[in-house]
Image 1 (cartoon, protein in one colour):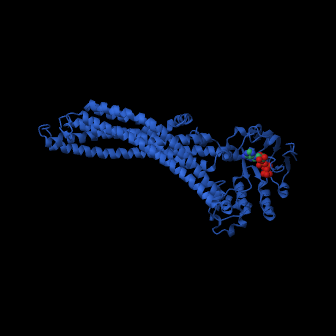
Image 2 (tube, rainbow, N blue to C red):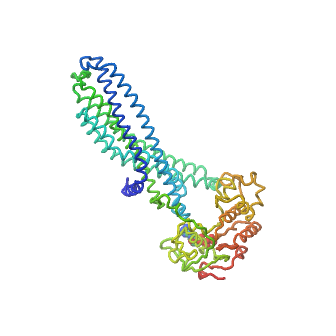
Length: 578
Ligand SMILES: Nc1ncnc2c1ncn2[C@@H]1O[C@H](COP(=O)(O)OP(=O)(O)OP(=O)(O)O)[C@@H](O)[C@H]1O
């Protein structure tokens, strides 16, 4: 794991520490109980073997052993086994709950960041990468919260409990366990570095493959028409093979790390057995023979506890990958700037007073896309009030869409400011800016779902009456009877196809439902035929009434809607005219 990773994970762990460690505490407590019960089980078994079985074979060694003792020990072992099963069940339940709660909290935080940053995010990260963070990366964090956190809190404590129990009965065996146990962290540190690196590389390969798949599915028509199917299939199979090789590497490292623990465990067993002279006797080169002694119970007890002693190390080694995944997720979240999650409840406490009117003012607004690139907008000033329709005029590339993105709050000006009702939008959160406005672009996004789902997406709590009014105002009722299931027709990806004009009507209906006082229109009639454009403009005209409207369009008919204009580009002076 690189230094950057370490720093990120440390910062991330610190941030998670409070809620996640609290959630992991019951896992730790039930794990400790499980260890204590395991010690009890080992004692019962050792006593059965030492006091009962051996007494039967060598009555002179344990003459007092009775059938009653044997039955009592077997009953105690059975009862402890039931308790152990229960403690494992409880531990698993708490671990699963800790994982679920933490993942839900992280998903909300990442989603909030994605929404706050808006489409600007897609300029620096591939959508597949963001989807992978929200789904896969956070999903695998389950292991971090459910396994790694409890394991990292207890990997020294549980073996210490076992060591104390063994020490009381057989100090020599305890010393052997301690020495063999001390070797484990050294081997784990070596393999851990490899595991983290392999896991990080595997995640990167997976994200690359996902991004590639998504791009190719989106561009499937282009691939088929360019006769590039074979080439693309080959490239995809190369990416998939890369992922397979990296996954195998992780498995190899995991196998080596687990083998190191096994070796330490076997070494401990052999050393305990060999150092108990009274237990095993080596007759020269002949096979060892057993010479039980009255201390047999203690030795057997120590031997039974060897797996119990190493179990937390094994748990930690298995969970090391989960930590490596957390490093990858922390890095990706850092990219979204969502590493520092908003404390729970902060958003809910905000008062969401409805915005009724918006006066928009831009003061000396400038913007450049790249640090040392040309100014796309230079010293723009305008003011728009309710019932005004401001046309952003200028040739292609003049910066009309850029100005609309600034108004949406998706990008920030290099100088100057935009004010909504005298408040600088730079001081507002994305969701507050969004409450002021509705936006209609060239091509509305239709989600996979019914037409109804797509409409009420703008306001899920809209009543049936409000929905009907929006449908009429946007003239959706003109094509509704043509849809096989009316409002319940599945549209969007995998659903019923809609024409550009019909899709644009859905966007207008959404704007009606949202009922925001500021309307931003970015070439809403581009790509429409004159007849459809005429109908859409009629709907937009009524939608504009009483609202503040800022509009960008190359269409003469759309331009005719405007009450004032702002000339952008080389021939414009950046001042609005009425
Ligand atoms: N994400 C981006 N990164 C870098 N430059 C960009 C980006 N988006 C737009 N630009 C550049 O900014 C300039 C203005 O683009 P913009 O899309 O705002 O123009 P426009 O007036 O809306 O054009 P059109 O009328 O063709 O839509 C163009 O030179 C464009 O190349």
